[in-house]
Length: 400
Image (tube, rainbow, N blue to C red; front, side, top):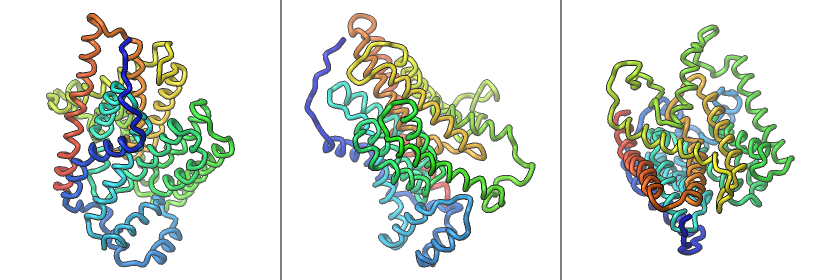
């Protein structure tokens, strides 16, 4: 077992500094992104021309299938603060991205040399996964980052500051449900953490959270039965094979970075196509992280950060959240759909890597194997984190 020296007790200030420095290159690219014209441009124009009171009255009265009032409120914030200049979306997006980065570091709460080293690799995973790039490719869509920020904020409260969790759970869940369908994952996180005994949450808080989720799902079912705002398929037109592939693709995308945008044609064994080199980088890095998490569930030793039973419960929680994410991708899937559970992937990697580092001997052949594994993870993900900045500029430039 190696001696892991404590450099200092940094508190939140160093984490804030690191979080901003890590996302600055991405924010720089966001500020230089052209306007991405997509199917939301009509909505943006309507918000520009309509008073908020009138707009929200008509919006709520129409009972749309995609009930996202807080997403529309964020557009009004851009209108009021930036006169709807496109840079307003980049600024808000940058704030939310910084919030995700800061909350992730606070969840991990590193205090030693080794912990900070592993935490930085974890941040490369968070910012380098193409689910993050998918959340940034449309600069007019900032609700994805906002719901991800709420998820990491809730993780911070549940895992690193449990005494505050009961105070913020319900407001955070309500905001999430009013922003995006993926806000249901906040409900799942709270309920599962209570059921699995990972963190102490009051029964009343859990029941209220579950009730909010049930009300939200009931609303969705009612709008489907009424046929309001539901335009994916008509009666009898659901393609269950495609829907199944959407769910499978979302699951494997999170764990292996394959297939990108549910495009299975990249798989050479099925199509005879050659594998693009960038796909090798993605696949290698993701498989290494997934394998490390699996291996970390095996040892029975208690270490500084990990109690084996709790770690296995958190891994089970992660798998259930992936399953819930896949269900939400029934009708269509995008890379960004997996972004909500990325913080859980990063946290499990952080805990698992520190866990293994404490129990694996650091002399002889084992030491060199351990260094090789670290490089196998750190190098591809460092490349991918840099690639996120380049990707969002290229993706946005192609949609105008």
